[in-house]
Amino acid sequence: MSLAMKKFFAVAIFGLLVLAAPAAPIFSTNSVWRYVKGYAEASTPDATAWRSPVFDDAGWDSGLAPFYYDTDTSASGYTGNTELSDMSGDYTCVFLRQTFVVTNVAALGQLQLAARSDDGFIAWINGMEVARFNMPAGAVGYNDSALSALAEPLSVQNFVQDRPGDFLVPGTNVIAVQAFNSSLASSSDFLIWLTLDATRDTAAPIAGSIPAPGATVRNLYNVEVDFNESVTHVVAADLLINGSPATNLIAYSASQYVFEFSAPPTGTVQLAWAAGQGITDLAGNPFTGGAWAYTLDPNAPAPDIQISEFMTDNQNSIRDEDGAYSDWIELLNPTDDDSNLQGWALTDDKQELTRWRFPNVTLSAHSYLLVFASGKDRTNATGQLHANFQLAGSGEFLALVDAASNIVSAFAPVYPPQLTNVSYGRDRISPNLTGFFATPTPGAPNAMVGAGFAPDVQFGRAGGTFLSSFFLQLATPSTNATIRYTLDGSAPTESSLLYTNLISISASVQVRARAFAPGLFPGSLHSESYLPLSAGLAAISSDLPALVIYNFNGGGVPVNTRQFANFSIYEGAGGGTRLTNADLECAGFGSCARFEYAGAAQTKFCG
Image (cartoon, rainbow, N blue to C red; front, side, top):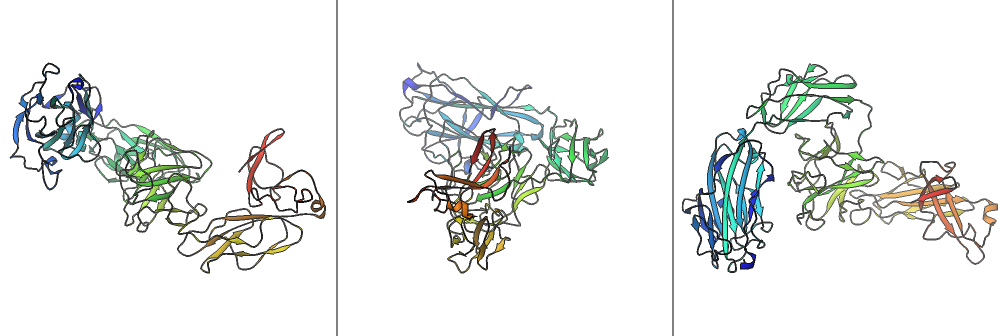
């Protein structure tokens, strides 16, 4: 860096937190490290091998931290124990390794790593990246440099990790650090030192349940209990259901347990931890228990959230917030009500239905929600969601599970092998029909035309008014396709009327049709409406345009509810406006409206 931009930076790993108990040092500022200068990668051919606990660093030099150099002591006055006097102009990084011993990982409550770095570094513990400061994303090479030079001085910051068991092991552990300068030749100084401290775990374990406390469930014969840390001495009788102990216990991990029991009577179901339960965490802190309740109602409405679309080999459809083309899963709420997904889960494992749980996030009515299946496990409800698993392109089970552990939407037993940049999902009208989408639509309605779809249905007569009965012909250019149609306004499905003969049209009706073909999604939905005219209406002529809204004998305009209707516009054609004229192409008798009274003298229209 330049002399004008000399700095003194402190960084630390994990999340800022005030320590609740005195910290015991694991290693201090002036501890001994193995190190090698960054003239080349620290290990070859695998440039990451040097971070592993099993890597042999016996050939590296030993040095006492801090590691430093300073060509202008009047500006920063850096000093330390191991001077890297040849660093400026020769290499931009130094590789550091140190071992430390942890006898009882479970007894650690928090781990605090403080560091002072000028200019940037990346740190790993037992091969897992735990910190990256002022460095570019992704893999870095020995000849890379820190992102920028920062103004000095900056004070030391202390950050902690409250789940050290996620990366520490009992016995010998290794911390590996790659510390960087901001440039090869124009930097006047360099500094790196680190300290590692730990506090003892004195916090009692905390438990959550699935279904979530207070939930209304359609069935209840088991409850999943998830502790915030590993616990021991858990038995089935620890959990009481309406005062009776659970009959069976399944331990999926040291923190995840499923209690099984006979289905209780409908109504309010009380659950409580037995007074004599002896559950403790691995540091010996006792679990304090508690109580909660559910409402058991077999007639409660079933959730209708769908996994509507997903992609397993995303190369160009959509990027996540890191700029990566991650796998993705799209959820759709097709109902008129918002749904809170807290306690729900996504899974690709039939044996672990709650593999990844949703945070407190609400899926609005008629809206979509994207979850990246990236393996990054991010549950910030205000940011992008990332499941803790990725999707197998070869095909696997995929399911959405509600808070009562019911499978709500699934591709089972497995979805088929997938294609690059091609999504897989459900038909918008018949969600039980699944297939490939050559045009993915993450966060938007699934496609209804294009490759992989049956052809459109062709109507022998356009919608509009008529004076005499007639026969309507439907056709499709594919001899492989069949046509399904409805006359009641509903969207046709694979079980709707099969078109085999001409359709007699003698009264007002809306004909809706789709083509179905083996191995393809149904074609796009085509609707045409036909309205008979009396002799009196047919004779009417006007100099003004005419608007016709017809609700197919649906009665009067409803109040506070919406009703489907047909909407068409007519205007003069060489002799005034007549209802026997063709309606305007832009509105057409294929158009649908929904209307309702919005006030004493106002009618509200919405498409």
